[in-house]
Image (cartoon, rainbow, N blue to C red):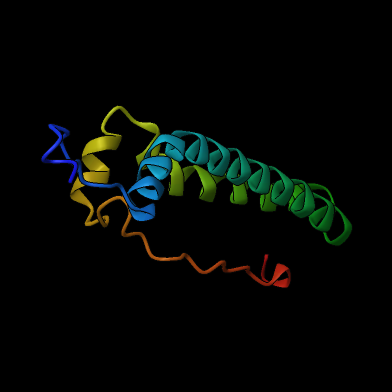
Length: 113
């Protein structure tokens, strides 16, 4: 009927297509929010650990434990703090964006510090 009247028929866009577009548009905001939440969790963990260590250890031991924690954190983040970060990520077997598996949160026993 519409074709006979000179109108062109366009394919419709389903909900899946709209969801995909909205996910792409909101992705930078979600990444920024996720990054901010990660930094906040790390900051919170530092201060919790500092309180626990201060209650458990004194003087030089307290300093040694906190310095060790900072050192381990620096070592684990070192690859992400260089100019070669993109090369590290692409060559380390990281899954394609969008195929990330849910990462299970692991909390160490604070008594092991």
